[in-house]
Image (tube, rainbow, N blue to C red; front, side):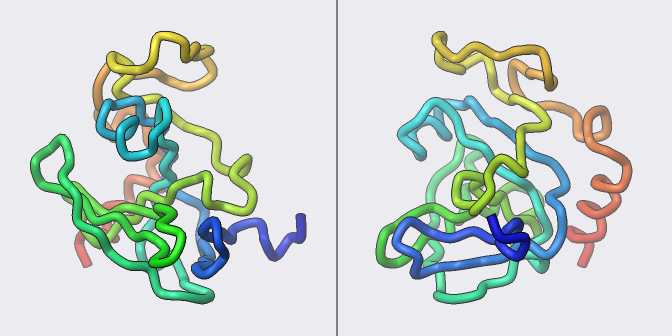
Length: 159
């Protein structure tokens, strides 16, 4: 892989290309039933990063509002042609933080999960090793995130 492609990603058809200009703050592997339904898979892997660190190289994603378990809803940015989900915005962070779908990165190996969440509803055939924390539900950010990531998150949502 070309060094310049390390932090880039794209949709399936290539209409949308983006670049991360910083390292993600934290990476979730979410096993909730909502993520399972949305992805058609056993889990979703999301890299959390400030929205202003996600730069479009080409194309214009469409924002689709969908329900979420919290009741607040989320906005999923998708390619208007192939409909690949590229990232979501939701929760208290709203538009300040993007939950990048790690599978859309050119090098998804660069963003392994820092934590598994909502494992109470994970598929029984998914086996987790103990390499990263696994939470039955959500977790307390201050207990698991590095201090610099917490500071970045706070700066992003305050602006």
